[in-house]
Image (cartoon, rainbow over all chains, first blue to last red; front, top):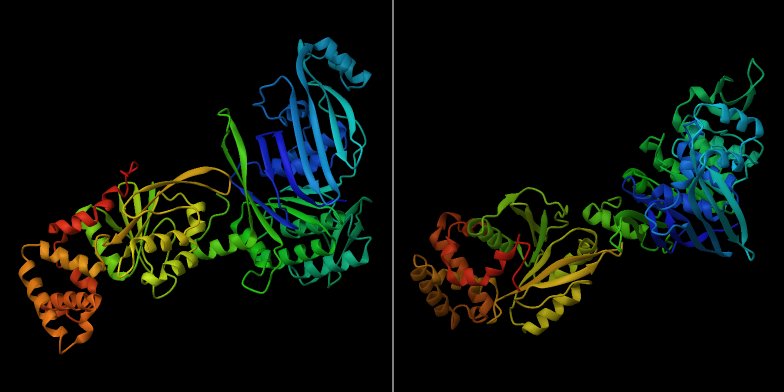
Length: 373
Length: 245
């Protein structure tokens, strides 16, 4: 698996064209709301996505992790393209340099209106769904159709696959892929199996327990326990032998386990964390972050962390030990994204400022540097 | 909101310029500045003024030899790139140096902007997002037309003011009389000028003779001095969008 050194993003959501180089092992992605932080994290995932709609769906769904209603897939899919593209051809193009060579992702195609009847024939629905849908009062006269292809290249040979979907296709069938890049959405810890990568590995489990103890020193074990109805519950065992399901614990413990779990899963790869501060009190940043960064180093995980929190940025910078003048290592880059008027005078674009952790640290000491804008 | 930055040598420069700007150009004292510049050691002296929607931050760097140190310590070059600063004016004494050397020395301290003596320069700098922005610069050397420092400007200003002229002339004569036998150190022009000003203010306000320069600054109506008006005329452009070159 790869760590990436640079990325070029073209026509993805609000990003018309953006190039960011010189990534480090810890990359903080900061900026105002709607500056493109989540899109930036999506671009990295797309680079490693399979050439199939199912992979794209998994990435789109992350934005609506708490929304169980899945009936807006087509709209969400089309909105991945930059809406200000002049051309009839919609084209997302992402390129990165990695330690294993270049990685490319392109998704392109055209959208047109067709009759509802024709769309139904082309749709991914099952025969039964089609019959049911045709009878329903919501059956539309015209429907949008997207036809195009996904080309991905992560190695020597590019893989191209034609794709076709209509606005009737709100669910994409197909097996879920194991993601090559791990992603933690801001509220993901509320709907996630938190122990899946931890309990079967004694080393990871012990490490997780020792970190949890910093939050609650009565914790002695984490495991699955069987409830009265036969289902398995993620549980914490305290030193008194009490068995507590995770549901009774606060967000902090869940978020912590979620990060650790994903870190283990991201070994030798990339972990993207959106809004790391969500669910965590700032007083724990100083304890948690060094553990996460050290573990990431040990597991060879490259981190991209999006945050709005100045406290989270400062706690990350503490890890750089910039007061130590002999420390020549620079593990941290701080990448600020900003929405600006586009150079071509049409619409907007996103630009990036990429500086070292030391630059931010020194400026913050000298003049209360506001890195987030 | 325009933010103007002015770097000057010492506390007395800050006090005189601040007083002048408040009384002649209508700037008002402010407690804080939006660049969050605060003194980092005993040499720094910061005063903040505002007028209309503009803010002027006057920074006394602690003496002629401390400009580079101040710029480095306060990360002024990063600040220029990272903040929206309309202008950076530098005010320095000429002393015994040539104009050429002073301009070269000041220019060597800044990374993305440049200076010329007595002239506004419209610099275009690129921030770290690759976006271009404008920053005006002005180098005011006191005094460009003769060697000396702020003290000689003050003496000239006092000579201009009808009410103060007889006494300053008298004091100049007195200091002159001491040079030959009693205090040969006064043969150095800067020493003589400092002694002249110190003596003058001690006489007109003997109650405060032991206090600092700031106590004296407010005793004089500096707006009556034509030479000071001429020297400080670039300050008229502060807070304005279009500066005359």
